Amino acid sequence: MLNIIWTYLQYGKHFCGVELSTQNQTEILNATVLLQSKKELNISASFKENTVESLSKKLSKHQHIVLIVNNDKVLSKTIENKQTDALKLVYSAFPNINLEDFYFEVLSQKNTHFINICRKDYINTLVETYAKHQLLILNISLGNHSLSNLVGFLHEKTIYSSNAKITLENDDIIQIEKEPVVSQSYDVNGISVSNDQLLSFSGALQPILKNISTNTNFSIEKRRLEDSYKQTRFFNLFIKFGGLFVLGLLLINFFFFNHYFDSVNELEQVSEINQVTKNQIIILNETVSKKQKMVDDLLKSNGSKSSFYSHTITQSLPKTILLSDYHYQPLLRRIKEDTSVEISEDIISVSGSSIKSTDFSEWINTLEKMEWIAKVAIVEYRNTSSKKSEFKISILIRND
Image (cartoon, rainbow, N blue to C red):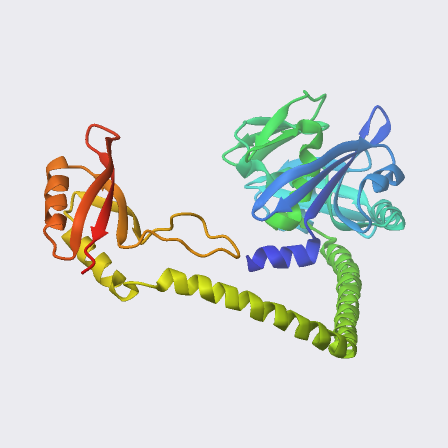
């Protein structure tokens, strides 16, 4: 959870990869935007554009981008060598190169090394161009090297990017060949990605996976780009949270002011409320008197014995009988205002269900034998199923 929050604070919830490629001598920008929701990643948008300006209109302001430069400005070579030093490998592939003018990126797969180079001034111009359109380059990769991030998620032995055929073996890239590509889609951990978007998709994943396996001579430049983005991100978050904080203070101040303003209004209305309250008290006293009379009617005659009657009846119940209603001296009619309460004096009405008729009969006999009971009348008895009957009885209390 903390890792998700920290990732959001650093990068937000949208991750963008852009591949700069060349098709029919025309520059194409393949873009993929991923949306992180909790622990899931899904493609939020995927599109092609021809200019940075048109790309910026489809992305949010200050969106961070991992740029994959995969056009004719990138020179590529593959060599077999047991050497592991990146600088020596570059000089082995390009003997006369002046590294003051070039950026290089080396992807080593055992003894096979894929080496890409591109002029520094070209890359720097790209970074400035994107920055002018308020798109911030977070990282840069050359050629098809960023696909090394995806090999663990792909099950094919041969995959195609926008301009190359890549051969895989045991989760390693063993060959990258520039050739006309075949339009295909790949399942990347449950996400369908076309070959044209494969590189931009891998670029968008870089800030999340953080599994960069290449060696470059522009690591300092990449750190500078990332630091610059994080400073912009921090500033924007500070502005947002600062604005929310100020708004919160204003709201608190408003609530306090409103509270005290209401209190003053209440004090000003006290005298009026007191007068209204006096009138209400008079009306309530009359109402209470009427209610008291109704309660007295309900509680008269044998009220003190009601608990004894209910306890005795429930104690006599067999386990096969379940009571649903018990009314001591039930009302003869509904209670209405300004009328006296009429009750069935010395009567207890009991309803319930029985699952054994013999137990019910024995229970009636038991009740009839009680000294305080004058009579037990079965008001209703009906079978609701083959094993269950419902009943209603009326018990007349002996009044000596």
